[in-house]
Image 1 (tube, rainbow, N blue to C red):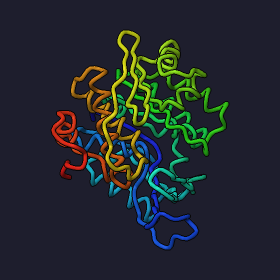
Image 2 (spheres, rainbow, N blue to C red):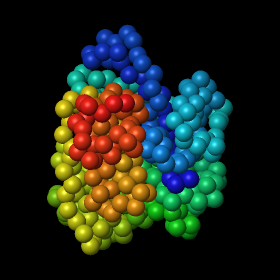
Image 3 (cartoon, rainbow, N blue to C red):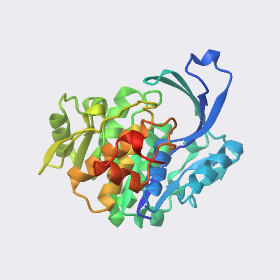
Length: 318
């Protein structure tokens, strides 16, 4: 595998119209999880990628595994359990940029993941390990699993890409700050949003946030700035890569995961830090124009077309 990632993926029930959830009668079923969004994004861009997790032995668990595997992601290390159900969540969307989610994931199958279940060789053979801050928040055992995976990556020379991806419904602020900074210090690349970076470091500007994380041990930092693109620094080079114009914002959920997939894809193709950031910006801008977490993830040809300046987003044929 070029990339391995792990974490909880759930079934998302999205409303069929933009009204408060209590007035919704119809829902569309989707697969949604930060780590599988990245995995599917990388697979669609032609990379070999694996994902491991734990799913309930139920229809939702079977659905998730089938869909993720159908996108070309290796699921051979996914475990099935009768001890807990697969998590689900509902999305409430009042307008394209006003979204609330309601999780039903407490004591879900994924929260039962255990460090002893980690296949170290599976992680060690990858070029990159992608980690988010969601998994260590699921349970104490998931936290141990996360650090065990980081240890395996370090041992075998796999580069670590860390997206804090903070879910406040899973953390208290003090605990989140300690654990996520510990992970960031072990990572080769840290990809926070600007708000996450401010929380983790207490700094205000992208440059100061990056400097603080670099001094703590991170190899490189990329701070996502939404429509403003992204700021990057590795202590030797730094700068801003502008975002791409988005004509129609349809669904902002999954933009950060799209960025991570594009960024890692760039690194796998041998691009330097600024070019990989630019590729991440391109993928993120495409994703927000389509409803759903994985439905808008582009192919490499789509991304290359946008990067070449030969097409507006609306003209990309998918």
